[in-house]
Every structure is written in structure tokens, then in C-alpha cells.
Image (cartoon, rainbow, N blue to C red; front, side, top):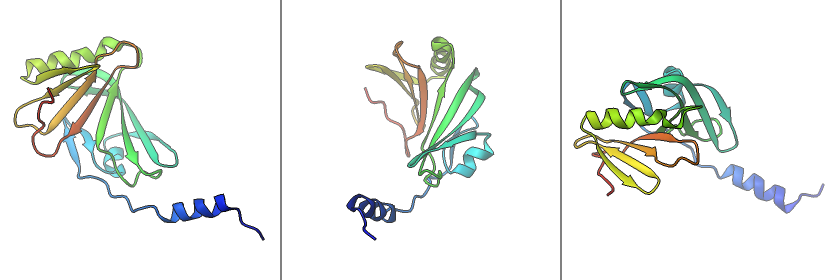
Length: 156
């Protein structure tokens, strides 16, 4: 039986995959922004779509800072989701302006904003949370919420 070099290379690469470990569980406003597949499922994220290297789980009807409802997703590392996720993405399916309500609410709550090209970053002194909202009108506007570890510093 002959073996092709491409097949052998693929087998070697599959065997070299490092074990994935999810980041620590983090939440903001009751929503998971980092954690494991189990954390995502416990928070109502379902309809997970697997591919070779990532998994995306979604949830509808999500509220943030009193605004919404939005659609949300967590993107997990590893085709089986074993690497966990490190951010939460929100968007509105039909209204590009719907995320502006989040911006208004954050400003009322004392968050600092910094416009950087096609994205507006929100941080608050003493908080490890960063919320980046797309400012472009040409694509699907989204908000990405991350936990920066210590204190999220403005990037302006």
C-alpha cells in the first residue's frame, strides 16, 4: 500500500495539536464573556456550530446595560469547543443603529469612550472590561466585550 506525502503530513499535524484549556470564567452584566463550553451552555448559548478549529454558540434576546434585545455569540477554540472563549459578540439582525443604545447607556454610567478608526472603545477606571463597538455603517455593526485581566486601559 502506498501512502501519499500529503496524507502523512496531515496525520502528523493532527497528532501535534496541543491540549486546549479554557480561560477562567468571567461575566459582565450576567453574561459570560470568558469561560468554557459548559459556561456558555449554562448561560443559554446553544445551536453550536462546529468546524475544524473553532465552535460558535449563539443566543437570542440578550440585553446589555438595559438595551436590546440583541443576538449574541461566543467563539470557542477547538472544533469541540474545548479551548473555551475569551469574548462575547453582540449584534442586531436588522437594525444597525440598535447598538448605539449601548453606547448611550455606557456614557451615562461613566464609561470613557475612545474613537479609533472604525471602532469605539469603552473602558471604565478600575474595571477590567473593554467594550468595542463598530462605528462603520458598511458591515454588520457589532459589540465585542472582553475581560482585560487587570484594569482595561484606554487605547487612545
